[in-house]
Image (tube, rainbow, N blue to C red):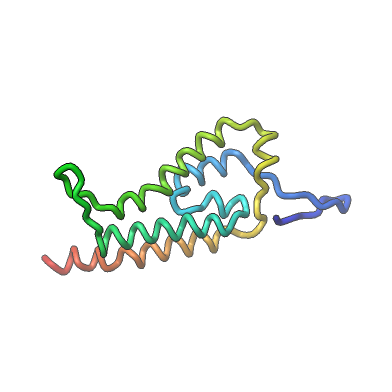
Length: 138
């Protein structure tokens, strides 16, 4: 957990802002951004890895499973899992009091710009073949 020093020399954990954490959880939670924000980098990386695995399997290697006469892409379930979990976490986050929120989470203190830019660039690179195929078939 990151620490910072106050003007009188005491070290304290950085507080978590409810609004920032809520926005990260709701909009970017499926990529693990909210976990990176609170300093749980391993769990954030897991969210991101599951999302990327779901995207790759959905776009490039779909796993079709027949269920009751329909063909369902099993990889979509892998892709949807982090989204559903992050929405549940968002509602839990909104339910907690400020004291409980600050007791559970402390911000990492590091710059998250690199994390978000890296995730954004990776997703662009992941979708480039799809865009290329869509425009080259015309």
